[in-house]
Image (cartoon, rainbow, N blue to C red; front, side, top):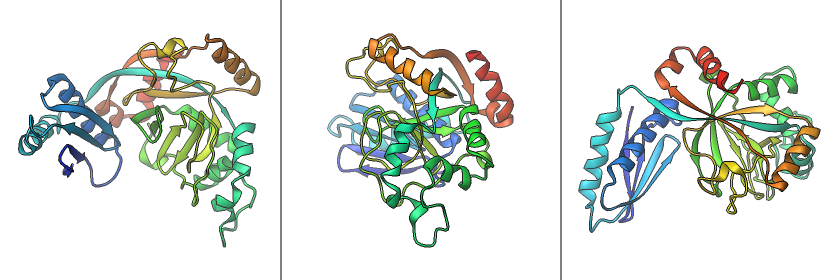
Length: 298
Protein backbone atom coordinates (compact mmCIF):
# COMPACT_ATOMS: atom_id res chain seq x y z
CA UNK A 1 0.00 0.00 0.00
CA UNK A 2 1.56 3.29 -1.10
CA UNK A 3 1.24 6.52 0.90
CA UNK A 4 1.80 9.93 -0.67
CA UNK A 5 2.16 13.10 1.42
CA UNK A 6 1.46 16.59 0.06
CA UNK A 7 1.53 19.91 1.89
CA UNK A 8 -1.26 22.36 1.10
CA UNK A 9 0.15 25.78 1.79
CA UNK A 10 1.58 26.24 5.27
CA UNK A 11 -1.20 24.71 7.35
CA UNK A 12 -2.50 21.55 5.65
CA UNK A 13 -1.06 18.10 5.06
CA UNK A 14 -2.91 15.77 2.69
CA UNK A 15 -2.22 12.03 2.63
CA UNK A 16 -3.24 9.68 -0.19
CA UNK A 17 -3.33 6.14 1.13
CA UNK A 18 -3.57 4.31 -2.20
CA UNK A 19 -2.44 5.21 -5.70
CA UNK A 20 -4.98 2.77 -7.15
CA UNK A 21 -8.12 4.62 -6.07
CA UNK A 22 -10.71 3.62 -3.50
CA UNK A 23 -10.50 0.29 -1.72
CA UNK A 24 -11.71 -0.91 1.65
CA UNK A 25 -8.12 -1.53 2.72
CA UNK A 26 -7.15 2.07 1.96
CA UNK A 27 -10.27 3.40 3.64
CA UNK A 28 -9.62 1.42 6.83
CA UNK A 29 -5.99 2.53 6.99
CA UNK A 30 -6.97 6.19 6.65
CA UNK A 31 -9.69 5.80 9.26
CA UNK A 32 -7.34 4.00 11.68
CA UNK A 33 -4.77 6.80 11.43
CA UNK A 34 -7.43 9.47 11.95
CA UNK A 35 -8.70 7.60 15.01
CA UNK A 36 -5.20 7.43 16.50
CA UNK A 37 -4.65 11.14 15.84
CA UNK A 38 -7.88 12.04 17.65
CA UNK A 39 -6.92 9.88 20.62
CA UNK A 40 -3.46 11.46 20.78
CA UNK A 41 -4.86 15.03 20.85
CA UNK A 42 -1.66 16.37 19.30
CA UNK A 43 -1.01 19.99 20.18
CA UNK A 44 -1.06 22.07 17.00
CA UNK A 45 -3.47 19.87 15.03
CA UNK A 46 -6.81 21.66 14.74
CA UNK A 47 -8.70 19.44 12.25
CA UNK A 48 -8.61 15.83 11.13
CA UNK A 49 -10.64 14.99 8.03
CA UNK A 50 -10.91 11.39 6.74
CA UNK A 51 -11.87 10.89 3.10
CA UNK A 52 -11.95 8.24 0.37
CA UNK A 53 -8.60 6.43 0.51
CA UNK A 54 -7.06 9.60 1.97
CA UNK A 55 -7.16 12.05 4.86
CA UNK A 56 -6.03 15.59 5.67
CA UNK A 57 -4.99 17.45 8.78
CA UNK A 58 -4.97 21.18 9.50
CA UNK A 59 -2.15 22.26 11.78
CA UNK A 60 -0.36 25.29 13.16
CA UNK A 61 3.29 25.18 12.02
CA UNK A 62 4.32 27.53 14.82
CA UNK A 63 3.32 24.79 17.28
CA UNK A 64 3.86 21.68 15.14
CA UNK A 65 6.59 22.30 12.54
CA UNK A 66 6.16 20.82 9.07
CA UNK A 67 8.89 18.22 9.51
CA UNK A 68 7.42 17.00 12.80
CA UNK A 69 3.91 16.80 11.35
CA UNK A 70 5.21 14.71 8.45
CA UNK A 71 7.22 12.40 10.70
CA UNK A 72 4.23 11.93 13.02
CA UNK A 73 1.97 10.78 10.19
CA UNK A 74 4.65 8.52 8.74
CA UNK A 75 5.10 6.87 12.14
CA UNK A 76 1.35 6.22 12.36
CA UNK A 77 1.46 4.72 8.87
CA UNK A 78 3.95 2.12 10.10
CA UNK A 79 1.72 1.32 13.09
CA UNK A 80 -1.47 0.62 11.14
CA UNK A 81 -0.16 -1.17 8.03
CA UNK A 82 -0.59 -4.91 8.53
CA UNK A 83 -2.56 -4.58 11.77
CA UNK A 84 -5.83 -6.40 12.34
CA UNK A 85 -8.66 -4.02 11.50
CA UNK A 86 -11.92 -4.19 13.45
CA UNK A 87 -14.10 -1.16 14.13
CA UNK A 88 -17.06 -0.53 16.38
CA UNK A 89 -19.74 1.20 14.36
CA UNK A 90 -23.47 1.51 13.61
CA UNK A 91 -25.73 -0.49 11.31
CA UNK A 92 -28.56 1.67 9.98
CA UNK A 93 -31.66 0.62 8.03
CA UNK A 94 -32.83 3.37 5.69
CA UNK A 95 -36.07 3.31 3.65
CA UNK A 96 -35.76 4.14 -0.05
CA UNK A 97 -38.50 4.79 -2.59
CA UNK A 98 -36.84 3.48 -5.75
CA UNK A 99 -37.93 4.63 -9.20
CA UNK A 100 -39.96 7.38 -7.53
CA UNK A 101 -41.90 10.17 -9.30
CA UNK A 102 -39.88 12.99 -7.70
CA UNK A 103 -36.45 12.12 -9.07
CA UNK A 104 -38.17 10.95 -12.28
CA UNK A 105 -39.64 14.40 -12.86
CA UNK A 106 -36.26 15.97 -12.21
CA UNK A 107 -34.21 13.63 -14.38
CA UNK A 108 -36.55 13.89 -17.35
CA UNK A 109 -35.88 17.63 -17.32
CA UNK A 110 -32.18 16.93 -17.83
CA UNK A 111 -32.17 14.23 -20.53
CA UNK A 112 -30.07 16.46 -22.78
CA UNK A 113 -27.38 16.29 -20.06
CA UNK A 114 -27.47 12.48 -20.01
CA UNK A 115 -25.59 9.70 -21.81
CA UNK A 116 -28.80 8.49 -23.43
CA UNK A 117 -28.82 11.49 -25.80
CA UNK A 118 -25.14 11.65 -26.60
CA UNK A 119 -24.35 11.35 -30.33
CA UNK A 120 -23.95 7.71 -31.30
CA UNK A 121 -25.14 6.43 -27.92
CA UNK A 122 -27.67 4.02 -29.47
CA UNK A 123 -29.79 4.24 -26.32
CA UNK A 124 -33.43 5.04 -25.67
CA UNK A 125 -33.32 8.88 -25.58
CA UNK A 126 -35.90 8.88 -22.77
CA UNK A 127 -34.45 6.13 -20.60
CA UNK A 128 -34.30 6.89 -16.88
CA UNK A 129 -31.18 6.91 -14.74
CA UNK A 130 -32.06 3.62 -13.07
CA UNK A 131 -32.73 2.02 -16.47
CA UNK A 132 -29.33 3.22 -17.65
CA UNK A 133 -27.64 1.88 -14.49
CA UNK A 134 -29.47 -1.41 -14.93
CA UNK A 135 -28.21 -1.74 -18.51
CA UNK A 136 -24.65 -0.67 -17.68
CA UNK A 137 -24.42 -3.35 -14.98
CA UNK A 138 -26.00 -6.18 -16.95
CA UNK A 139 -29.17 -6.73 -14.93
CA UNK A 140 -32.16 -8.18 -16.77
CA UNK A 141 -34.68 -5.83 -15.19
CA UNK A 142 -34.95 -2.71 -13.06
CA UNK A 143 -36.39 -4.92 -10.30
CA UNK A 144 -33.26 -7.10 -10.35
CA UNK A 145 -31.07 -4.00 -10.19
CA UNK A 146 -33.03 -2.62 -7.22
CA UNK A 147 -32.72 -5.98 -5.45
CA UNK A 148 -28.93 -5.91 -5.86
CA UNK A 149 -28.73 -2.29 -4.72
CA UNK A 150 -30.87 -2.86 -1.62
CA UNK A 151 -29.64 -6.29 -0.51
CA UNK A 152 -26.01 -5.39 0.09
CA UNK A 153 -24.80 -3.10 2.88
CA UNK A 154 -23.02 0.17 2.09
CA UNK A 155 -20.10 1.74 3.96
CA UNK A 156 -20.08 5.47 4.64
CA UNK A 157 -16.60 6.30 3.38
CA UNK A 158 -16.65 10.08 3.90
CA UNK A 159 -18.87 13.11 4.43
CA UNK A 160 -18.56 15.98 1.97
CA UNK A 161 -19.49 17.81 -1.24
CA UNK A 162 -22.36 19.52 0.58
CA UNK A 163 -23.20 19.60 4.29
CA UNK A 164 -24.00 16.13 5.62
CA UNK A 165 -23.75 14.28 2.29
CA UNK A 166 -22.45 10.71 2.78
CA UNK A 167 -20.33 8.96 0.17
CA UNK A 168 -21.21 5.26 0.11
CA UNK A 169 -19.13 2.24 -0.90
CA UNK A 170 -20.91 -1.03 -1.67
CA UNK A 171 -19.81 -3.95 0.50
CA UNK A 172 -19.55 -6.63 -2.17
CA UNK A 173 -16.69 -8.17 -4.12
CA UNK A 174 -15.33 -5.64 -6.61
CA UNK A 175 -16.57 -7.61 -9.62
CA UNK A 176 -20.12 -7.34 -8.23
CA UNK A 177 -20.00 -3.63 -7.43
CA UNK A 178 -22.53 -1.40 -9.13
CA UNK A 179 -20.66 1.08 -11.31
CA UNK A 180 -22.14 3.72 -13.58
CA UNK A 181 -20.74 6.94 -15.08
CA UNK A 182 -21.88 10.33 -13.85
CA UNK A 183 -23.86 12.64 -16.12
CA UNK A 184 -21.60 14.07 -18.88
CA UNK A 185 -23.07 17.49 -18.04
CA UNK A 186 -24.07 18.01 -14.41
CA UNK A 187 -27.64 18.92 -13.46
CA UNK A 188 -28.45 22.24 -11.83
CA UNK A 189 -31.08 20.54 -9.66
CA UNK A 190 -31.41 17.36 -7.60
CA UNK A 191 -34.21 16.70 -5.08
CA UNK A 192 -33.12 16.63 -1.45
CA UNK A 193 -32.48 13.09 -0.14
CA UNK A 194 -31.98 11.61 -3.60
CA UNK A 195 -30.07 8.31 -3.63
CA UNK A 196 -27.41 8.82 -6.28
CA UNK A 197 -24.64 6.77 -7.85
CA UNK A 198 -21.55 7.75 -9.83
CA UNK A 199 -18.53 5.59 -10.58
CA UNK A 200 -18.24 3.09 -7.72
CA UNK A 201 -19.78 5.47 -5.17
CA UNK A 202 -23.32 5.94 -3.96
CA UNK A 203 -24.48 9.01 -2.07
CA UNK A 204 -27.46 10.62 -0.38
CA UNK A 205 -27.96 14.23 -1.48
CA UNK A 206 -28.46 15.91 1.89
CA UNK A 207 -30.01 19.06 0.40
CA UNK A 208 -31.53 20.14 -2.90
CA UNK A 209 -28.98 21.37 -5.42
CA UNK A 210 -26.80 20.57 -8.41
CA UNK A 211 -25.32 17.14 -9.01
CA UNK A 212 -24.10 14.66 -11.55
CA UNK A 213 -24.76 11.25 -10.01
CA UNK A 214 -27.41 9.00 -11.57
CA UNK A 215 -30.63 9.16 -9.52
CA UNK A 216 -31.87 5.80 -8.21
CA UNK A 217 -34.60 6.86 -5.78
CA UNK A 218 -35.29 8.98 -2.73
CA UNK A 219 -35.33 8.46 1.04
CA UNK A 220 -37.67 10.20 3.49
CA UNK A 221 -34.92 10.14 6.15
CA UNK A 222 -33.05 13.45 6.60
CA UNK A 223 -29.29 13.07 6.97
CA UNK A 224 -28.56 16.72 7.86
CA UNK A 225 -30.66 18.94 10.12
CA UNK A 226 -29.32 22.07 11.87
CA UNK A 227 -32.47 22.09 14.05
CA UNK A 228 -31.87 18.46 15.18
CA UNK A 229 -35.60 17.79 15.38
CA UNK A 230 -35.57 14.01 14.99
CA UNK A 231 -34.40 11.52 17.65
CA UNK A 232 -31.37 10.29 15.71
CA UNK A 233 -29.90 13.82 15.47
CA UNK A 234 -29.31 14.08 19.22
CA UNK A 235 -25.52 13.93 18.77
CA UNK A 236 -25.27 16.58 16.06
CA UNK A 237 -26.74 18.12 12.93
CA UNK A 238 -24.87 15.66 10.66
CA UNK A 239 -26.26 12.17 11.20
CA UNK A 240 -23.85 9.85 9.41
CA UNK A 241 -20.16 9.28 10.11
CA UNK A 242 -17.36 7.55 8.19
CA UNK A 243 -17.52 3.87 9.09
CA UNK A 244 -21.30 3.69 9.47
CA UNK A 245 -22.96 0.85 7.56
CA UNK A 246 -26.25 1.49 5.75
CA UNK A 247 -28.77 -1.10 4.60
CA UNK A 248 -31.37 0.26 2.18
CA UNK A 249 -34.94 -1.00 2.53
CA UNK A 250 -37.29 -0.51 -0.47
CA UNK A 251 -40.56 1.22 0.40
CA UNK A 252 -43.77 1.98 -1.48
CA UNK A 253 -45.35 5.34 -2.26
CA UNK A 254 -47.75 4.88 0.66
CA UNK A 255 -44.93 4.02 3.07
CA UNK A 256 -42.88 6.95 1.81
CA UNK A 257 -45.79 9.35 2.33
CA UNK A 258 -46.31 8.05 5.86
CA UNK A 259 -42.62 8.50 6.69
CA UNK A 260 -42.65 12.06 5.32
CA UNK A 261 -45.57 12.90 7.61
CA UNK A 262 -43.64 11.44 10.56
CA UNK A 263 -40.62 13.58 9.64
CA UNK A 264 -42.82 16.68 9.53
CA UNK A 265 -44.29 15.77 12.94
CA UNK A 266 -40.86 15.13 14.43
CA UNK A 267 -41.65 11.49 15.26
CA UNK A 268 -39.73 9.67 12.51
CA UNK A 269 -36.88 7.46 13.62
CA UNK A 270 -34.51 4.94 12.09
CA UNK A 271 -33.55 1.41 13.10
CA UNK A 272 -29.96 1.74 14.35
CA UNK A 273 -27.96 -1.12 15.84
CA UNK A 274 -24.40 -1.19 17.25
CA UNK A 275 -22.11 -3.60 15.43
CA UNK A 276 -18.48 -4.45 14.88
CA UNK A 277 -16.90 -4.87 11.46
CA UNK A 278 -13.75 -6.86 10.75
CA UNK A 279 -12.09 -6.12 7.43
CA UNK A 280 -10.19 -9.40 7.47
CA UNK A 281 -13.31 -11.49 8.17
CA UNK A 282 -15.24 -9.66 5.46
CA UNK A 283 -12.44 -10.21 2.92
CA UNK A 284 -12.44 -13.94 3.72
CA UNK A 285 -16.18 -14.33 3.04
CA UNK A 286 -17.97 -11.14 1.90
CA UNK A 287 -21.39 -12.69 1.32
CA UNK A 288 -21.45 -14.71 4.53
CA UNK A 289 -20.12 -11.84 6.63
CA UNK A 290 -22.72 -9.45 5.21
CA UNK A 291 -25.47 -11.90 6.12
CA UNK A 292 -24.04 -12.20 9.63
CA UNK A 293 -23.96 -8.48 10.40
CA UNK A 294 -27.35 -7.78 8.78
CA UNK A 295 -29.05 -10.21 11.18
CA UNK A 296 -28.96 -7.40 13.74
CA UNK A 297 -31.69 -5.63 11.76
CA UNK A 298 -34.04 -8.63 11.73
